[in-house]
Length: 194
Image 1 (cartoon, rainbow, N blue to C red):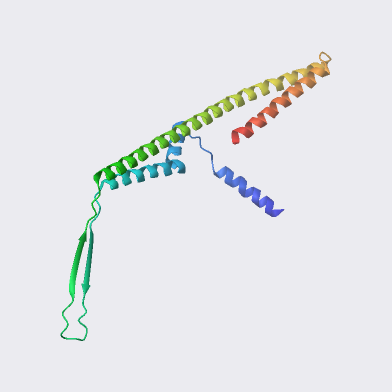
Image 2: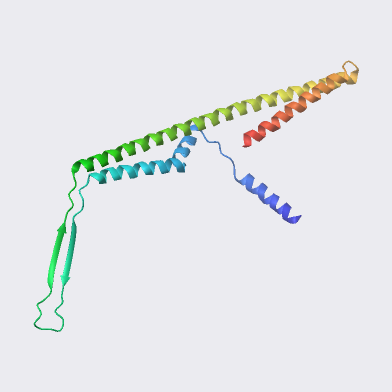
């Protein structure tokens, strides 16, 4: 029992210490664009394709080999070792390099368009969420106002019933109406928290 009370106390303290801040729509867009891992991965693929495209146009690196043979050994009459240098360069047809570079540039452009598409999806999702949030907040305000009026109506119906001027059905209907509004408020609060 002590552990449960301690846990609840810590949770209540932590929840009150971590205040929830409202985020504007433009701040949410900036956060989504900067911190979205899928979008970051797509952008890195685009950069990779651009670098590969530039590299495809570069000439092949020459290959230089050096060999030294020193086999004089113990025989003094043997000649000294020899040194051999080889330089090799593979020449490719430039059309192949141009075609490969262009294909990689097209791939980079395709990936760029994919990133833009992902950004548009993020914008639409965020705008839909903000519109739904604004609508739910307005509905919450209207439900609170309606609930207050329904409670006043219930008090009036109870007074009329107490004076013999109203019926018990009117009081029960007013109580049901108030209970339905309070239920709607609880459901809406749950949706706003999610």
